[in-house]
Length: 405
Image (tube, rainbow, N blue to C red; front, side):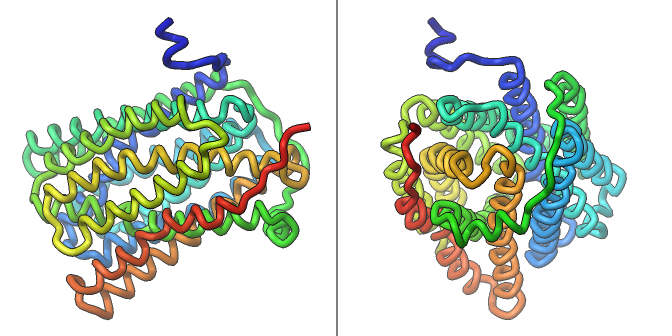
């Protein structure tokens, strides 16, 4: 009975389960460390530009790696590509541990390692998701993965905050980054149990970019991903810096993460169980409006209380938007030109547009804080970029997926 309540009518296969567990380990490792890497670097530099450059190197290397990883995924096993990604992510944490309090001197190297790791990992993970799930299991998979991510997000930041605040100077950071390294090592081991998925065929990256001219749905989806990236670029790092500046405490950042992920955990579970195909577009609209409303709360006067309200609002909004949005994206790819042969190219092109949005976002942020007063320019920029997820609906509402014959 409990299994049916959690899974619904979905039948779990071995590969589906393994992919969920690997995704869960990835999420826990990222939840433990990624937010705190920005603070670790902030404490060493105190510069918005430095933090932005670190994040810019991530989002520049990520799409470039995606393009290369896509080519490799057509020549070698997808599972090997996944493994390469996890190994690079492990190298990132190893480098942070070796660099220690001199990590800020290697901003671009660290960002590049992370971007390369993300590129290989997410290309392979997305392709495997496409191959292992079916249209009727995608909402469940995306929702359940979101639930696992939220669960990791509940444990990770709080545990990291406790560890960092209970050890002197940077010792706590060393322990946290070491734990993340261990989790990625476990993910590498689990990847050996995934069924091998041999590759074949030529790589038609440019052809799938050109498909935007022929396929209206594909053009709309890629445009939507650009605007998604516009918000994500800056918001992925600036909010954690805001929390630290307003409190001066890593524990406060852990509490922020716990509240956000605790609510998100429930919201993802409900989203994957109850958002059906006919409600997808409305859910995306509601989620997008709620995300922009959250920006309005923090944009003028940043306080920790307001940031906690922001955390709660986006925890509800993201599942509402992302679960149907990701499912719609995969459905559009699924009925696209030569979808079975070109699924890797479709995923690569989608990721390129997402990261183009992130690059524009971070470059805008660097320009704003370099040429203008930080206190005045950052709120205006957040108001503009914060509309990215809301604008997704304008594209998604025009998507028309033909009914199955």
